Length: 213
Image (cartoon, rainbow, N blue to C red; front, side, top):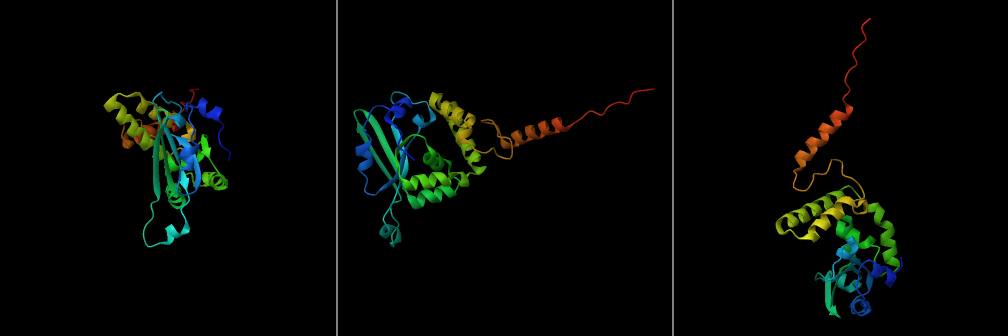
């Protein structure tokens, strides 16, 4: 894994800002940090903040103590009018979420917009195909429905773009679920009924009438 060049970050819509101080101001070593949110999905606006997501490595003493450590850490700042926030999970928690078919952490791990990386990040990324299941499609279907409802309620453009993004980009939905996905606002039962009807229609053959002699 390599850090994404500044030119590619600017092409993705990230404003000119030095992320190094934010990344360096962490109490524990970063495993990786990538760009998420609107910049990853391809529709940032001029006022979009920079959403950084990743993982850090807590010391063994923190994990073996009697008290539960702080596994998720959030750091936010404002640099030259650009809001930036970095949210990281301890590597142990990140691995738990990854094995629980959490699409968000999988997306963060495989984001092509990399601002900090290392050997452990490369190893995790290499393992990513092994954790993909059809349940990730369910995850994004739920996300699309939530964004669609938000669009219906507010009329804002961004939820509509998120709905379109997760519904049309196969990279966000690596395997199709066994049944046909319902359209936003449609119940799964209705979707299954339509799918069954299409299957029956495709397999039905009208018997030929013998030619009369």
